[in-house]
Amino acid sequence: MNPVKIAPSLLAADFGNLQRDVEIVNQSEAAWHHLDIMDGLFVPNISYGMPVIKAISKFATKPLDTHLMIMDPDRYIQTFADLGIYMLTVHYEACTHLHRTIQAIRATGMKAGVALNPHTSVELLKDIIGDLDLVLIMSVNPGFGGQSFIPNTYEKIRTLKKMIKEQKASALIEVDGGVSMENAAKLIEAGADVLVAGSAVFKSEKPSETISKLAHAAVS
Ligand code: DX5
Ligand code: ZN
Image (tube, rainbow, N blue to C red):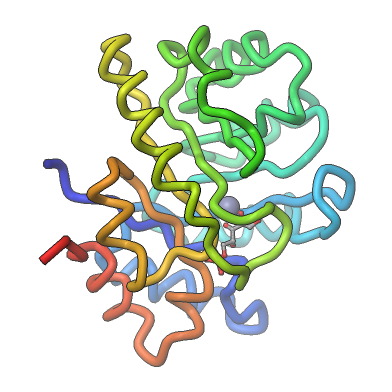
């Protein structure tokens, strides 16, 4: 089994000390920095935008995993490419022409992901899974950090893993929302490749140690 990747979500970082918190991730066992972009329309919250991403990218030494919770994300694909984003993930529910959006992301050289809200079935991806680098399964309703994990997520991961295998696709499965030491091992066992963690990392006493513990979580 490949080691799980940990992507700490900077949404839970101390924005007054953003550089310090980005450096914590740089120095840790994390694989990626997870950036949450919200527009106040697709989700009932606004997080941060281009100037802040630009500042983060100046200090970040790991790939930027960017989760767009915005309507009509096609408008900003080139802007995100210019900012040096590694993985650009759009929401299934926010794209009318998802196939076109995915092609447009890949044409810039970025990797392309699709995120699913808790109510959206993974089966809906069966005609596009071969074109995806990543599927992000939301394990809370998007918009806020610090919410409780939705247990139905395990079954969604298993179903998606099966679909990926059957189609010989290579998309990674990322889980986002309420991830902690309570559920990390079970998520890995179900087939998760990437775990996003905000509160569990940044609200802990030693964020770097928490990242290591999550990275090495395994069913005993
Ligand atoms: C929620 C975001 C998450 C969030 C996770 O809409 O997509 O990435 O930061 O935060 P925690 O880990 O606190 O649930
Ligand atoms: Zn996210």
